[in-house]
Image (cartoon, rainbow over all chains, first blue to last red):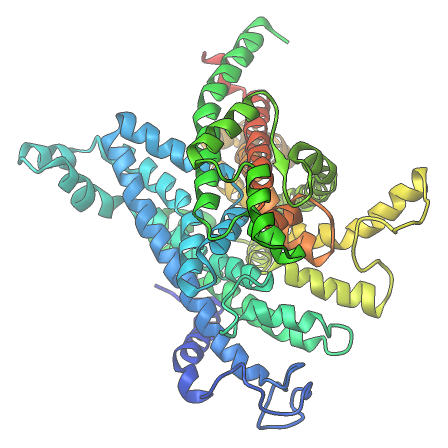
Length: 273
Length: 330
């Protein structure tokens, strides 16, 4: 597989962000929300605090690195949960057919008609601000996409010979569905799952921007919101965390694109005609 | 309109209605149970603002009917909705329908504007790339759309405010119109338009990327179809093939996407409306959630669901007009 320049760059950026997220407590130990210096120190003014300090004298770089921890872990967990749950539901609906299919698909319709962000908003305010409530809220809004994709794949796979072969061998229906059909049907859902990571980063940022995040943890959205009050004089306090969000989401999108080309070579060839 | 088209129309309407009823019911009951599970109710949220003693708490719970069992309240609510009564907003102290109708205009203006702009730029952009799949232009379009996908709209909004409202002072900071300006007619319309430039731009980027990508991917698929080879063999000019055949066929999935998008419109505008201080439905949904105003949130969610069902119907009909294969076969 040939790796393009853009894909390599995206992988590098995401690698750095992930390393920062994983190693945050060791590279920049201490509470990122603690006051450490003079407020509103400019970036590069003092090399101990390379990105300066915010309105309350908190280290911007420390908050950024610890914020990566929150954003990336929430996005990854939510996308994973949505893809797994969606794939299982899609397989059940497609394989079982009949009323199981009808009930599950109406449920998916209901989730689709409620605006994702409003649902996430309501869920977070009901469960309370925590990392797990973010994962649950974002995951619950994202499962319908993979469910539909997998269901469509399963419907076309169901009529294949290998399924009949399993049935003749006496395998129980649920085992055929989950062990034999599901693995063959998840390709498109995995590609979608990668894109979901990026959109989950954006939703997480927006929720914490609105002040619904855990107030005891640094997060990118909350940094942008904080910087908003001094936008006129210290615009970089909102700009820097925003750029981090864009870098993370864009890298994920580029990698997701490469992944879906790799998973569906026919499409990639078509694109190169 | 041909008779068969009329019959089709009735059929679609009935089918959609049969699908819509269970969906609406799931949404209504789901939202109700979700808010029911939340710690604290509207009285708590109300007292957090105004203060009051235990007597007032009991009084308000009785007045707002919150002391009844939840099943009684759910059934009463559903019965009300059937007769067009969406209940009473406790946070605004007014009928839910009134509050929603008052705010809906701003959100429709914002979301429809953003979508129109996204279509106007996104479709040509998609065609620009999809004309020659794999070319430099195509890859440029794909890269730009990937970037737009990754931009948080509210942050773009803040940066636009910084550039065009704070630094350059060309456009207003927020709101939908200048307060107490007494503008009328064309002057007022222009004033509102000026206020909506930045929020529309921030909101449209994501849709733009979505439409451009869908258009481009659709064209890539169509290029492979046998009828294009036939058109080439007939010696039809390349330009005509692109616009009359490829673009036309590739527009179909985009039309479907617009319909699917209708449900997400409100969600996208929640944060944008907050950043630009626009009194619309998105911000209303946020206020309803934070103030535990269950009837209001239910009203907004149900109104949105109705909008989605309507949009899907319109898309279904548009599809029939665009795709000659559907309808003829029936």
